[in-house]
Each structure stands twice: as structure tokens, then as C-alpha cells.
Length: 432
Image 1 (cartoon, one colour):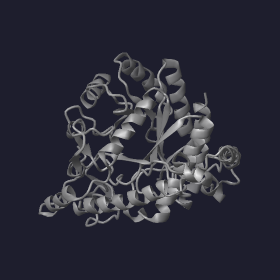
Image 2 (tube, one colour):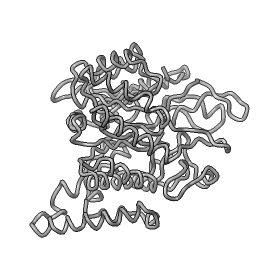
Image 3 (cartoon, helix red, strand yellow):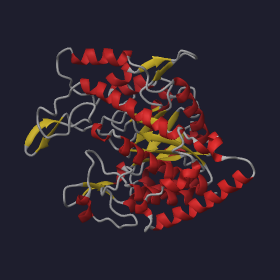
Image 4 (tube, helix red, strand yellow):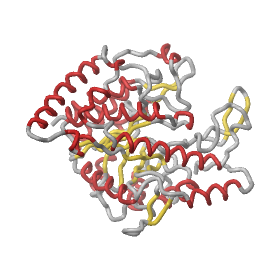
């Protein structure tokens, strides 16, 4: 399902041959470390913050764009860790989220039927028939841009940019006038007080790795099986197969067929996996897929990411939790409050309401508390830019404001201000 119809000719085989010979983007040991940390989230000892672009654009593979996204993820992480008093596992939708599922192979654009835009790794969003022809060489371009992104992310996270004593530098001037901005300043003061105390007793943040370095894991939907298979390698130290395109892969709500190719592929790799679950799930089918993807019931192997919508979550989540709990499945429960809350406004733009996103997360936590299960994380679509794609938040964006900076080629994302504001709301839910 969801595979492009590649044109005839040698380009596909040549591209896949080249991909299969290129170095891995991530390593088996990193995937194993993430799996161990996710096992802590199963028990509620850690919280998963998985976030990033809906679909990455090749044109936005730039230093400033990557830095701004990383900055907002670090801001959210600091808020959640310090105010929520819980370890945060940071997983970006980054360095590989270049493909997107579509409901049809073709779509109507300005009255003309043409191939659907399937993400920059497949074709171009430009509304011309020629631009929409799938080009397998774009998978190579995706690899190179993912490698460049990973290189910069690792430089930032290990080179001092993510140091805790730089927390003030992450604070954006645009947040100053917002309630979340004022809260953030107070949080910064508290952190500085803690840092000064640690320095006074001999723990210098500049020479303490836990305080001046961090880890951002990568993830994307394992949609293009040609690309994923070409980047699958055996672990030279411990054996076993790993999809080295990202630390974590997830399977979408449209591609989780029990006997489908995506489940068959993912069951054979040892990466941590995620599975999206929407309102149309069949519980017996979900149980069978869990058994196939995680037959040894290994904690940290599988994250179930629910995407029901604020109005539907109360109808669908409780029974799902009870059934999976009764099976004794050791999974991370994560809430995707984005996809179930998408609507189209009167101007023809897709958007999401901040209040609906927040309401679904609140309900997610309330239901888990009532069922005696662990709310382990959130899965968000956001950007470090000051876009106007989702309504609401402290600035009270309305539908009529979205045209000011509506950039996405895919789904609407939270901007930096809304993201930090959401982090404070999350921290209050996490606080013991």
C-alpha cells in the first residue's frame, strides 16, 4: 500500500543500488539505547516527546531551519523535565520524514488530474504534470539531506548548543509578551539558581556531559519500502537487522495491514517501532499486529500512537486500553492530538485548533488515570518558525489570520509559541 508508481527504466534499480552501498544514517547501538529508554516510558519513569515537521521539505534543509526546530524541541524538553520532574526522551520527526501517504494515486489541481504529491522524496508539490511524475532519484536526494540534517543535529546536541546553562539563549524574543514566555522566564530563573548551586558544590556545567550535551533521536514513517529496505543493515557487533534510516520507525494508520508489506518488513528489523491507531481500528486486528511486531513482548519495542480527535477519544480509547492491558502487552502509550483534529476552514485551508489539541491530550491523561495505565508521551507536528497554520494559543490566531504565514505543503503545524505554551500545559499534567 501507498507505494509510488515509479516510471519504467533503470533509474529505480540504480538509485536503490547506490542507497544500499551508502553508509548507514544511524547505528544499531543507538537504536538499542533508545529502546532501553522507551522501556522506562512503559513504566512511567520517562516521557516521550516525539515531534517535528508533518513532511520535511528539501528546501528547508538549511542550518537556520534545523536550528530553530531543534531550539523549540529543547525549550519544550526543558519545561517538561524541570517543571514536570520527569526524564524526557526526545525523538524528532526529522532527517527522513520526506514521504507522505495519500488516499489516491491522483488528485485534481486547478481542474487538472495529475499524480498526487507524495512528499519530496517522491515528487514535487509544483502543480504541473511533469513535476508530479515520481522520480526514484529523489530517494538519493532524501538520503543526502537526511545525512546533512543529522550531521548538524549531532553537532548542536554534542557541541555545547544544548548545554543547560544556555537555556536563556534558547528563549525567543517573540515569546516575551506571552503568558508562556513569562512562565518560561521564571523557569529559566529557577534553573539558573540550580546551576549556580551545582557550580558552587563543584559540578561545573561546562565539564559535565549530562548538563552540556543531549540526544535527539530521529524517526519517520516507514512508508517508502524501497528506501527503507535499501538502508537496512546487519549489526556487525550483536547481529540482527536494523533499518538504519532512523532510530525509530512507525507504521501509519493506512499501512498497518496484518498481512501487508509494511508489517512484514518492520517485524524483521530490531528498531523501536511505533504504530498509529485511528478510530476505525479493529481490536482483534490490533492485537494480531502487536503479536507480529513484538512477539517477545519486549518493553520499549512498540509504541502505540492513538489519533482519535478530541471529540472521539472518549469513545475509542478506554476499550482499547482495557483490551491491550488484559493481554499484558508492554507498550508505550502516546497521544497524537493533531491528525484527528484537522478541519478545512472557509478559506480552503486545513487547520487545527490549539484548544482541540490540548483537549485531546487532557482527555488522554484522564482516561489513562481512570484505567490504571500509563500515558507515556505525545506525538506532535510543529515547527520552530512563526507560521500561522493552527488557530488559537495565546495570540488567539483565527482562521482569517492563517494566510499571514501559511507554509506547509502537508498538514498544519504548531508554531514555536504554541509549542512552548503546550509544553507548560503538559508539564502540569506530568507533575506528580
